[in-house]
Image (cartoon, rainbow, N blue to C red):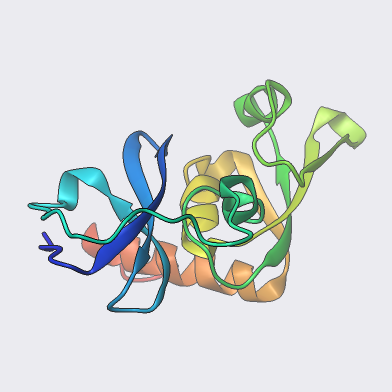
Length: 159
């Protein structure tokens, strides 16, 4: 847990995302707007400065390209969803950029463009063998590496 003492003074937004509350605020230590999970903040001290919103700040713009919370490089990816995963994908919107097509045999082709690669990987892996990522090759490789590390935990030697 971090202790914030005079590191934050511009509080922009309090949001509930990914099953937790987050504070979007300017961090003086890193000199940028950051996302802070509220239950990790141990203490806060009032300071004399008055609140002022950063010019041009918009919470919608802050999150617009993110999968959930994480920022970073934007990636475009495509995956095929089968079996019970088809219903999940067709049940609602998972990202504003998504494009969904029902393909031969009833499977669902899903593509999206977002930042937050770690969250995207976790989301995709959560569908188990009901999803096959088809692009980009770099994302496929990272998913394979993640699954190899997971199999090592359970004593599997080869994949």
